[in-house]
Length: 220
Image 1 (spheres, rainbow, N blue to C red):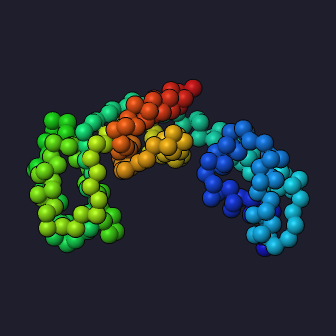
Image 2 (cartoon, one colour):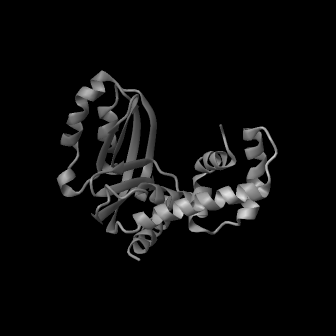
Image 3 (cartoon, rainbow, N blue to C red):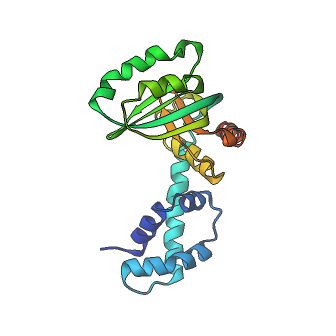
């Protein structure tokens, strides 16, 4: 049977920004309870007092704070690398293209620092590459169905020292901070020690600043 506590949890888990603010203790629980009450009442099918919602919020907030306290012991640090002049292709996944993908790596001089990332999804393939290869990639994809092409992008790569892979929440925190600044992400790529986001060049300075501030906060 649903309870006020369980419904508060469900509602907040669909609102990540509120969830984060609750964990940081910067929300007025009374105001938030008043805001959430109509939805909680609709979900439970009965009237609910604000005081009961406040109690559920307080308990959930304490759980989040305890979780953050545990994760803060997993110290990581890092640096940022920016690469400019990137374009992005989103293409229909096909058997022929899958067979040809290895040829991409012969087209791009990765050893010279040029950018190439290929992500294979269930139905689509995305290719992010240095802008100077755009014509070659368009020729390479001329028989394929291209859903979208985007140019004027940059990549920001966080290279971590420490146990990035087993530290929960890092990817969420990075995405959340960029979202707060209304920065759209065209690609997200992670490896054992790196997290890369591809964004519009008009957001590059702002995005770099956001990530730099995040890294500084990690070390405190």
